[in-house]
Structure formats: structure tokens, C-alpha cells
Length: 74
Image (tube, rainbow, N blue to C red; front, side, top):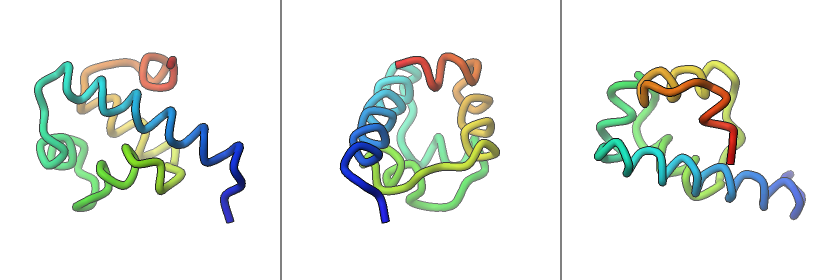
């Protein structure tokens, strides 16, 4: 169960990911394909519905051609 404080963190991270993705002119599906992650996962992350793993974060950062620090720096 995710408490309110943690939910706020996930939502903030998801918004940041969306901004990064859009700045690279990628659709959610494009990012999923580039990062080799499951269908609909980007949408779930951007809505703050899931707490991603370090492996997924690394794949997303690599697909966006950014550092992990930039992905988490919001």
C-alpha cells in the first residue's frame, strides 16, 4: 500500500518523466519500445501508479539518452 507522501513522490516523478519524454518528442509507445519495457508501463509511471525499479529507471534514462541523475533530478 502506498501512503500519501509516497504517492506525491511518484506523481512528481511521473510528471518529470512526461516532460522529459515530450522534450524528446517521443510518444509513450516510442519510449516503451526504446527502453524495452512492457506495454502501458510508461503511462502507469507517468500517472504515479507504480514505483519503478532501478533496472527500469536505467532503461528509461538510456532510452531518453540522459543520465539517471537527470531522470531523478526534479
